[in-house]
Every structure is written in structure tokens, then in C-alpha cells.
Image (cartoon, rainbow, N blue to C red; front, side):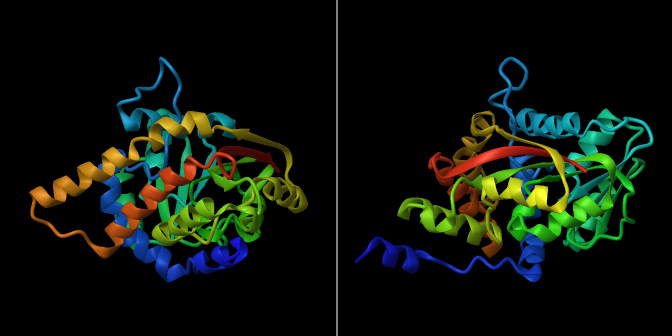
Amino acid sequence: MSTLTILHKLKLRKSATKEKIIRFYDEATEDYEFWSKDFNMHFGYYIPFKTNLFKRDSMLNEMNQQVFDRLQVPKKNSLVADLGCGIGGAIRYGLRKYPLLNIIGVTLSPFQVKEGNKRLKNMNGLILGENYCHTSFTSSSVNGAYAIESFCHSGHGKPALQEAYRILKPNAKLVITDAFIKKDEEQLCIGSTYCYEQLCKGWSLEGLGNIEKMKETLKEIGFSNITIEDVSFRVAPSVLHVPFAITGFIIKKLFRKETLKPQSWKNLKGSLFALLSGLHMKSFGYYIITAEK
């Protein structure tokens, strides 16, 4: 059997429909509390002697800080958009650190809207039930926007980037933190392809964008001063927490005599293949992208 035939057989449907994404987050949000007490639905950023290798939220919150540092917005009366905000972990971090900011997040999940807004009570934050490809923000209205591991649900596609460009004020910045592939999908080896497909299936992702093509797309839309930082080694320590988090989560469920929901199994599977994908360093990388309107 040829390599191309094997790759074809391994190819699975990755289509991340709106319904699948909503179901994923409605049902899996409670799983993330075990990953992060602050409900950070992303990986972390490790800095020696600043963050704690053994405390995930130390690294996860540092990723939030790295994003706000790159936004470079005035810390008073600025409006920032969180495009794919989850339950608002990054919003809460930003408002605790910069209480005079105004942050509005969007998510497709009604559960996250309800629970997230409870957690933002008495803060200058709000979560709306909207698609980040079609928001209700007026054009040129926000001082900065960020997407932390959210644009992958739409395959890092052009519509999300165009919407971010539309809502940003001139000279405002978009910051994206996410995993990307370093080559076209067809060029991935068999092992990388399998890990990639299982990752997408487990986490209801449309796919990961090609990092080189991402820069070209941002330029086509009109962004300038584009900076792409490979922070894979900074992120790796938090990714290595995955097997321990999975084991602890399952043990907790067994101890409480609770059954794991199907979406929890998918979520755990996706987390495991995120770790395995990270080992294929020639194929995958984790990046922080900063682009200016």
C-alpha cells in the first residue's frame, strides 16, 4: 500500500459545524475547571524563575499576560474584544490586572455566556453569544482584539481575520495565540496526519492553518507590522501537564462513581493528541502572532 493511499485512509472529516462547537463547549466546560481553576481554556507560557512549572495556572495566566502585553492598548477606557472567549478566563485575568479596561468576549456557547457573565459580575466585562466571524461590533470600534486558541475552530480561516480587521480601530492590534502546521496537510507524514486528524476530531476543530500562509492572508486583508513568534518551547511545559491532568480527571470521576460523558472522552482524547502532535516538531508549532491594522 502506497504512502498516499495510507494517508487517504487516515483522512477523517474534520468539519467543525456550529452545532458541534456549541455541543463541545456546552458539555466540556466543566472539564476545563480541572485543567484550570481560573477557567483558562488554553496552554501556558513558561518563563524561568517567573512561572511555576508545577502550577499550570501560573503558566496559563502568563499566556494571558503575554497577549495583553502585545496588545499595547491604553489601560484606561479602552475597549478590547476577546474573539472566542470561552467562559471568560482571559477576560477575568485582564480585568483584574487592568480594572479600567473594557473587554467584550464572544462565544457560540449559551452555557459559556450564562456562566461566564456570572463570573464577570461587577467587572467591566461582558460575554455575548455571537460568532467571531460575524460580530455586532461596529466597524473601527475596538482598541485591540485577541484570539487565544479559538480561531482553530474555523480553521484559521479568512472570515475570522477579516472580521477582526473590520472591528479594529486604525493602528490597533490583533493578537493570536495558537498551534499551526508548518507545511501543507498533504505533506504531513503518516504519524503526524493521524495525530492531526484525531486532534481535530476530539476538539471539534476545522483544522490548523499553515503558518506561512497565515502571514500571506493577513497581508492580503490589510494588516501590517506582522510579527510571528515561535513559542513552542515556552508552551511545551504546560502541554506536558496533559497526561497528568487526564489521569487525575479520570481518577476523580471514578472516585465519585461518576460516568464520563461522551464529550469528556472526546475532550480527553483531543488533549492527548495535542501532546502527541507537539512531539512532531517538524510538522507543528505554537505561535504568537501580532498584526496591526
